[in-house]
Image (tube, rainbow, N blue to C red):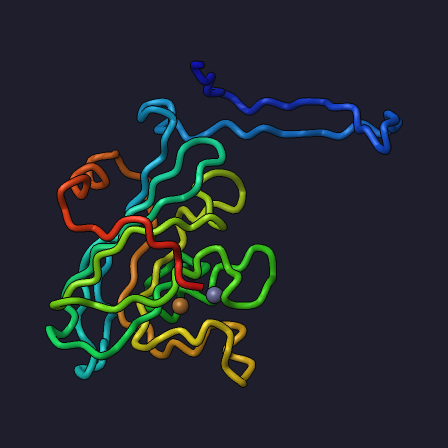
Length: 220
Ligand SMILES: [Cu+2]
Ligand SMILES: [Zn+2]
């Protein structure tokens, strides 16, 4: 069946049914039109985030570069993520947290990106952009995962927000202090980027053939 993609926002007036009865209060549903790229790229939106080290990175920290790529089928497909980072130590015993932070503002490095993006005011690691912990192999982090809580569409979209790579491992909310439920105590923010819309080309370049580890769910 061919799906029809709306080009304009559609406002539907729906009668609210409560306990089998129509209530006298109609409910207003707004079906948001997608970004124009969804129509262009086969009902799918692609986004990328070009990771660079933060300014004033302490010399003890690795300079991490690479991309975090996103793909989502309109309107409610599960968000897929590919992480492809380099610049980590060849022998690295450190597992590192990656999160989506609220503001796409790297003007003062990772200070201005704010806290974890938390549109539903819940504790860490229940935030939509809590990607989890990642270990590097031969200086590289390369992983495919699904992020069911996050979206590229709608008012709670992650577009324009920041991806942050941390110095340390995320305690996933299991720590004894308050900060554990806010940020997972993952230490310094050592690399970051802002998520923006792109074409399918970067995503397709890493598929298939590249040894991206498939099918790993976010480790929360
Ligand atoms: Cu973070
Ligand atoms: Zn979080």
